Image 1: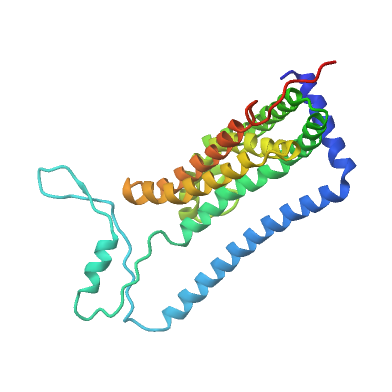
Image 2: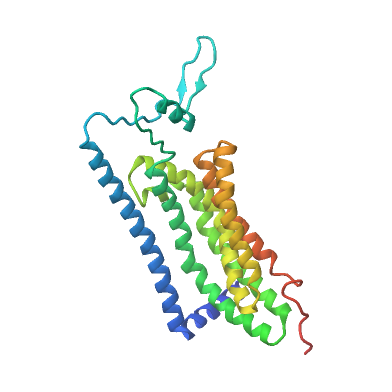
Length: 289
């Protein structure tokens, strides 16, 4: 894509936003409300956590909290150190100890939830950037399809996809090389920063797929071919949820497994959406002139 084509697409994007001001305002309002909702839920979760901790501290000394200590132990003399982590089986064993009435194991804690929220905000921040390109694609692709020019519709969709991909890469790739800096922009909690840096390192490069997928989603709206984007969204959910559980618990990656699954889900979203923008789905030759 040449610089002239990119400038023309940017001009058309701004024209589409300016021509449909009410729709643009409502869309931006929806994005703002969504981000505000996530922030509010995170704040409520932290406030609830502190309240519960304060309530439990007044119960006295009959409640014990066991946290993992050193990950490496000395082991048998002459033998290399071994790794010993707390597991759900350890919690089950504690339940069988006489005198213990209740055991409530916690897998990751609030620090992991807060860290994931930081990585999710990176994706939220990309939505307004891609929206400008996407809104123009809906109009341009719709016009080409209305004229029966499917070849131009596909070419326009892919031009916008590469533009959005480039914008997303310009943000996601540098952030993945310095995830600590992004994490510290949201919090100064060392535990949250450490986990968030791991999450951003996985999610950052995946934003390339997110940018292309979102642009092609808007293009598919203009073409009236939404089956591909819907399937892509379902694939993303399945990989993030099911794949996260498999990687975390079956493969044994822990939190990194969940973060990797989220990144793979975002990448799959872009790949499946892109696969649907092809002559077999967007049919028809260009009309004769």
